[in-house]
Image: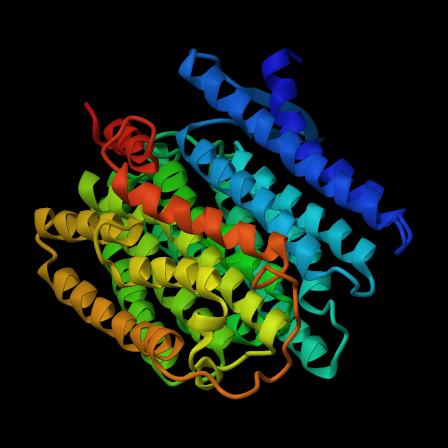
Length: 498
């Protein structure tokens, strides 16, 4: 094993070893647990930065051990994996800081942060998987490690939400396992490869490949919350705010969207998928999900539930961009993988701040909250306006490229869909902002906690301010050499180049 392979292994172990160590701490070891959390998250940031630098220097990263006879457990760093692992690592650091402040004084913190770190390990493994078996392994590990986080509070609602989450994701995992085994039987071990790995089957196994594509999309569609496979997501909102942020922006839902990108681009190949005629049905499924999620968000008074249905809608922008043949649509979908993560995590941080500081859980309770918590509300506003697609924020960049890609591909219906979606986004976000900034606050908040001269705990405030800043930066610097958009353009150029 060379030093480059050790970097990949170190990225995984930085969170895995942190989680294992935290499990052995008692509840009174608050200071040590905090330092272990931040050390693990910081070390992962350093290792991912080293990975990025190495790739720019022309290094090739790979790590492999025998998992089963003839089937290696393999890690690698290609353009797709680097995009997702960087997003996951950056957001994990800020979610860790937020969670430390959020759970201060709460019971079972060692259990929570242990599984929290293992969850990030599974997400990182999904990002760095170099073949289908490795992907499947970490994909199922993600289900196992997130369940204890969903049920962390131990209430009847939490346990019910956890059972629903487990039922959906295990069913999806079973379908995915069937698809992997079937494809393995046809072609042997499948390594992820630019432009796909099933070219040799195109002439003789067309019908089977179409069926396999459908199975892959169903299996992964559970975690990606495609309609009608999304039912677990609103129920899982009983989890603490850091878990909700993790589920929506970093781990489960985003892992599902990333999985769809992986299967379309690096297993089937975008051009092979187009020849099989499977992209248009996927685009329609994404379009239905986008509208359905937005419509249901309109009618939710629960703030986290409104954000959950917004996620159902917004994540399918990634799927839509993946399903439209052409480089511009691919750019729009892939860059939204990053942009949606930044915006959504900011919104859930804000929702958690309102709940922990003032006891606010419903949109109808948010009158005048901007006067009491201006910095949190400013961050929430930036993310909400970004979701609507207003320039110069990150969401505008994603939607712009999706529109251009749809036009270039002759998919005019997508422009109508995106316009309708943006109007619905405005319809469920702008009333929140109006209440927060322009309506009179109540005489007394539901459950107010004082934090001295700060509007809330400084850890709870720092995280959304930083991620809101990243939302603004991703939009303003979109055309620079070091933006997420620049990296995604490189991916699209390699996918559609000569």
